[in-house]
Length: 353
Ligand code: NAD
Picture 1 (cartoon, rainbow, N blue to C red):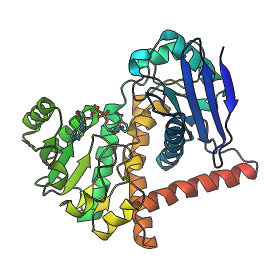
Picture 2: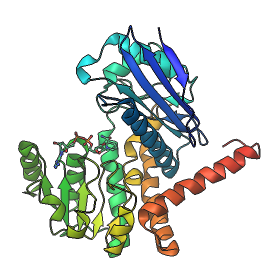
Picture 3: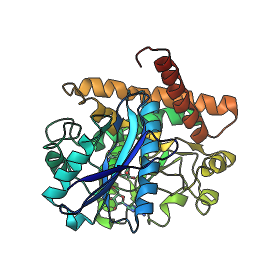
Picture 4: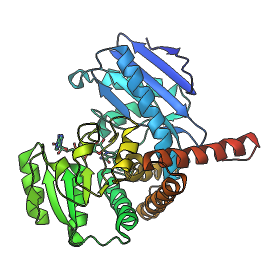
C-alpha cells in the first residue's frame, strides 16, 4: 500500500514522502514553487546512503528548477522527485507506485526522466498519471536542444567578453564529449572555433577531436588549458577553490548542472576577471523544448524560437552584473527572483500569471 506523508519544509510549497513496502518504493517529491505555473522537474533514481541525503538533494534540485524556469521565461514552477533505489532494483511495480505518488499532486508537480530513469520508465508512470513529460514520440531527446541553447549563450558571452561573437581562431576547451558536449563542440567548430576536448572515455574524446579537427587533452588538464572559453559539459562542481586560481580562460560557458561548487565561487570567478555564463541559464534548452509538449502539440519551430530567450536573458543578466557590481551568478538569481516577485504580485492582485 502507498503511504504518503507531508513533510513541512520552510520555503517550499509542498514536500511529500512516499513509502510502499510491497512495491519497493521509497521516494520524496519537493515542489518548491508554483508561482509561475506547475512545477516541472525530473525523477532521479539514486541509491542515496540515507533519507537525509535524498531529502537535501531533492530540495536543492527543486529550488534550482524554479530559478531555471523563471530565467528561461517559462510559465513553470520548480519541483523534483528522488527515488531511493539502485538502478538494478527498477521494476514495473516501483514506477506504477511512483505514478500514483506523482498523481497525488493533482498536476502541481509534473515529472520527467532524469538520472537513471528513461523514457520507457516514464511510459509506466504514465499508466497512473497524466502529469508526466518526455514520453516517446513527443519532444524527444533534449540533448541537441540543450546544445543549441548553450551555443546561443556562448554567442552572448563572447559579445560581452570580446565585443563580438566571432569564433574563428578562438580556442574552446570542452570537458565531456557526451550527448550535449559533442553537439556543442561541432557547432563551435562549424563557426571556425578551435576545439580542445577531454573525456574519461578516451575513445569519445578522440572521435570528437577527429570530427572537429581539434585536439585531445588529458581530463586532468582540460580545465587549465590556455583557451578563450572553458566549457564544462561533464559533471558539476568543476569550478571550486582548487580549479579557479588555475583557470586560463576568459569565459566559462558549458551545459553541466551545478558548475559552481559553492555559491561564493561565482564571486571568485568575477575577481579573476573570468566571465561566467550561469549554468542554469545556458542549459535551459532541453527544458524549453519539453515545455513545448505540455498541454499542446509539440512544435519544434516554436520551441527553437523560445530558446532565443537564452541569448537575450544572458545579455540582461550580464547588464545586471555590471550595473549592480555583482557576480553573474548573483545577477542570474536576481533576474529570476524579479520575475517571480512580479508574478506573485500579479497573482495577489488577482490577475492571471
Ligand atoms: P553524457 O553522460 O552524455 O556526457 C557526459 C560526458 O562527460 C561523458 O562522455 C563522460 O564520459 C564525460 N565525463 C565524465 N566525467 C568526466 C571528467 N571528469 N572529465 C572529462 N569527461 C568526463 O551527459 P550529457 O547529457 O551530455 O550531460 C552533460 C551535463 O549537462 C550533465 O551535467 C547534465 O546534468 C547537464 N545537462 C544535460 C542536459 C541534457 O539535455 N542532456 C540538460 C541540462 C543539463
